[in-house]
Amino acid sequence: MSYDVVILGGGSGGFACALRATSLGLSVALIEADKVGGTCLHRGCIPTKALLHAGEVADSARHAGDFGVSATFNSIDMNGVNAYKDGVISRLYKGLSGLIKAHGVTYVEGWGKLVSPNTVEVNGVQYTGKNVVLATGSYAKTLPGLDIDGQRVITSDQALKMDYVPKSAIVLGGGVIGCEFASVWKSFGADVTIIEGLPRLIALEDETSSKQLERAFRKRKIEFEVGSKYQSHTVNADSVTVNLENGKSFTAEILLVAVGRGPVSAGIGYEEQGITMDRGYVLVDNKCRTNVPGVWAVGDLIPTLQLAHVGFQEGILVAEEIAGLNPRPINYDGVPRVTYSEPEVASVGLSTATAKERGYDVEEISYDLAGNGKSQILKTAGSIKLVQQKGGPVLGIHMVGARVGELIGEAQVIYNWEANAQDVAPFVHAHPTMNEAMGEAFLALAGKPLHAHG
Ligand SMILES: Cc1cc2nc3c(=O)[nH]c(=O)nc-3n(C[C@H](O)[C@H](O)[C@H](O)COP(=O)(O)OP(=O)(O)OC[C@H]3O[C@@H](n4cnc5c(N)ncnc54)[C@H](O)[C@@H]3O)c2cc1C
Image (cartoon, rainbow, N blue to C red; front, side):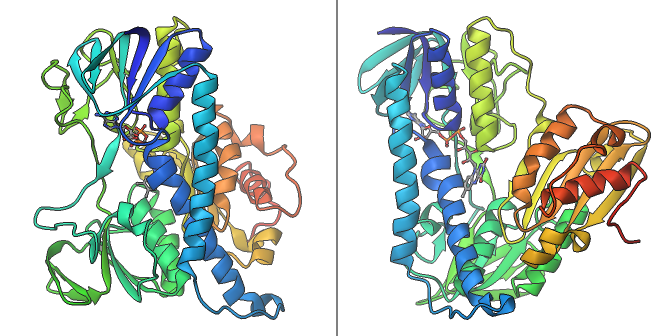
């Protein structure tokens, strides 16, 4: 069977490519071994955010008295939480499956292998494409000697299916996924300790965001050890003990290994077809072309930011390039990044350190959410930090606080439009909203602060 585009993997990158390609009149076969929607829908973004929302509801009940509301937090019913979470997934899955069908995509269930540069074989049937898009995604990595048993030592895959709240948890890895699970479990009532080898939590974010998240986690009594490396662990009858290189050890009911994700690229024929790879990642140019003509790669499989919206955009880019629309390459600095813990962390553009490394003469201001009415109403703390090229455009926007993930839309437009503070300061922001804090930050950066202290 032959198509304009054969796509291997139906996650964020693969299905976005399929939908855009068919809408441009191309014939598409989409091959998926498990379920369309991939990691994000079934084991990533959506289930974690449902758990985080359940955690927020639990915290609201717990702290209702702070707002003069009489309520008692009793317990977490994980069956109820999972039913809610799975309900969200299944509605979205149904919707997505319907979209794929409505677009006329040929959906092939099964494990596929690249058997020639333009052919993928599934269950003995060959699907040939003028173009082949590799979108096989990623898996949860572990460390040497740290075996995942699925019971005491788990990854996010098992953590999302747990039918109980652990009394205590060690989270190995203080990146986005680790911090989100630490936040959920704390909200659900567990004692949580994060162990991070780098000197700070969410180390890819601006240093001030890490510091503020650490402060907030300390206040929430989420323990963490940064700059500490895993050495060994022992699984006991009803607990697991982790020993660190610095001699410290921690014991908890479960150990979540959240040390990053690796590309799914082994044994699928990529090497045999001569595709250039580095540590398992498929290498591509700025239009997601591999070194083999007609073969493209998108999503977590390539060494760009491992985010669903990056996969979507890469999938769309490839479809448009194949259709001859000559789309603009993606500016990865302009991709919004959100950690959905309590509090949330959101950013776009460059950190202060990166901006300096790139030779910019940097100016920065930080607007404290203490001056923002809605933040006071919500009882959240944090800030919006702006990094600007002196006399030039905004280079980075970094936020910490409840719900700041919802502010990233405006931040990303400002950054990607290369706006100056003077361009943004005149925009009127609704009062009282969290969004108003963005307006206030830009007023301050433009030299005319309103509700700003110090
Ligand atoms: C716990 C967690 C939370 C996350 N939260 C967020 C978030 O909040 N926001 C965000 O933007 N991102 C988040 N992510 C990241 C996001 O899930 C990924 O970036 C995204 O899913 C990558 O899409 P993809 O299409 O590259 O790969 P995947 O979604 O992994 O899809 C790849 C698909 O290919 C299939 N496949 C693999 N090999 C074969 C084969 N040989 N034959 C057939 N099919 C095959 C797999 O079954 C899979 O369905 C999270 C990830 C995790 C693990």
